[in-house]
Length: 442
Image (cartoon, rainbow, N blue to C red; front, side, top):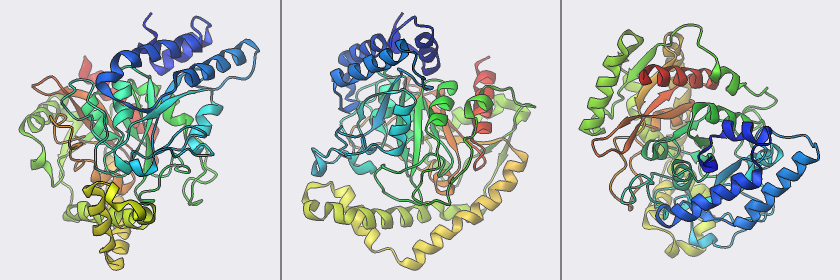
């Protein structure tokens, strides 16, 4: 058995039956990393002995009959903007080389409590912005893996770990998932706490997950849902939605989809536009083409105002003494953010409610929106991470979104299909995605 190829749910099952030890599973993943890391470069920090010692501890707990968590013994990668106690978290920036947090981020502690093995830190772009890290696309090393959660997507796609954690402020989960051919899931805004995650834009920051199946995606996301947020009004004292149960249920009736091109449709490459048109045609009467009102045409500007102003507010002090050591792209974002007017910033934030009010009516009729995850296949370049333009509206609105690896480019690279759901109805989105995946695979 190739243990590194096990899904999260299969790994939980074989570990639970005692067929495999956590140490054996982690050792096989480490062997896979040793083989593919020289060309993929997915890891910012990896300590094999530390990974194995965690696995041995999980095995000892099982032998002693201790209570076991939902991910007991399963190795998980953590994006390098998420704090891990006594393990380097350097934010993908040389300015913070050697930074070692004293405490785990909330979600990392939750993973530990549920028995996961924290495998290591996956590569991020510079402070989760645009300047790429060292990671290459596992399908073709000359192509970008996307960003900013580059290493998290690549590590799952290369079968180094069965699941990984990333983040998204614009398109940093959905786009790399599309480029690397894995499932990327960005839950509803606030569903997964961001305490201990590098603060870029509190209005836009989301935590997301990567996996190779929808069942795994649901389990991993459900495990790190919680109510510990900086803003106690977001998700405070709410029950955990049963994502796994809902995902694995049959929908009460076949779902209906709204195909949304958005105002940026022409930025998608020709092959992607043709591929989506063919897929929509194959879906028949389960999908309608809809146009968004003119109000949505400004969402890209609003996202930019908010994101860059928040970058200026949150990164200026961090980078002040080393502006010459950060990329020109990040310096440009900081400078641009300093020029954003307060009236524009506040107006942009206020538009989320208006957009969601319109979309709430759409979701009364449709189970999910369907739209590209990216403009096409992963660009043949390691100098940029691709365009997040098809992710922007849904991140801005805080809606749950996921990328399914359903299409393929002429060059054989994966192209993701993005599904978007109603706010706080994440389980239904996962269930709808599973239905669509099954339907199109028949």
